[in-house]
Amino acid sequence: MDLPRLPATLADVADRAGVSRQTVSNAINNPDLLRPETLSRVQHAIDALGYTPNHAARQLRTRSSRLVGLRMSPAQEFTANMAMDRFVRALVEASRDAGYHVLLFAGEPLVEGELPAPMAGYDDLLRSTAVDAFVVTDTYLGNPQAAGLAERRAPFVAFGRPWDDAGARHPWVDVDGAAGAQLATEHLLERGHERIAWLGWQPGSRIGEDRRAGWHRTMTGRGLPTSGLEAATDDTVAAGRGAAAALLDAVGPTAFACASDTLAVGVLHTLAERRLRPGQDVAVVGFDDSQVAQVVPPGLTSVRQPLEQVAVELVRALSDLLGPRPHTSRGVLLEPTLAVRASTTR
Figure (cartoon, rainbow, N blue to C red):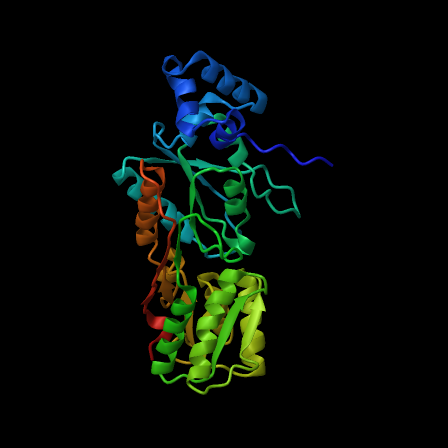
């Protein structure tokens, strides 16, 4: 089966016509500035590649639209994951302060049992809408959106590291998950816990592996065992509840450090079923400091990501990327903090 043709970019037109990007810009917006033979060559390249004028407006980095595209993924059912809501609000506010607006868009309708197409929604905007750039948040499994946009020569920044591409050249901002899990584990150690279980995600999640590494290095650094004290499961409340029950039966941990607030809420369910008091009998720490962590009884201690600062750094990178001067790609790794509540106090 033939692969779908990628949308043409300004760079493609310039290469085909043998001219600069600015010359392509002039051909579209100020044709009187060009010699007839140059204008004809550019127009033939545009026709041959199917390049559209409003696509040109974005690619020229003129920021004429002042729009930044962000794809929204469907909310996960039966989870406490609300970090994206907080991030989107922070991004909207940071973009507004810099003179941009965020354009939210969806991918193709999901088919049951199938993953969303990595570039669904992006190609539609590349063909028809003059957005200046994209913010990519899907950094799982090597960030296929980043690879797709780079292949299309579309300007973008990413919330999340290029895990599988050490040579990636796009700007990115991320939160140090290992440092966050280390904060959680050290907090539990300071409260006298030594049998600290890790409740994480199924293998294959780079974000999950990063967070687990913080727990593991902290435990081994103190000479404490980790064998038998961890479980990997799906990121749902029910899965967290079942995994916590199995760990309590098998090794009897006195504390849980979790890869997400969703899994931590599952632990709290199990403790309630067994009449164990969070913070008193068994301590629990989540990750993300969602609204759920702030209101669930008795209050869930959780690693808080600095999402407001993530948004500011992303918009700063966008401004550099879309500016008149050549930009230098850079990665920014931010440190999380710990919001302490009753689930870990004795």
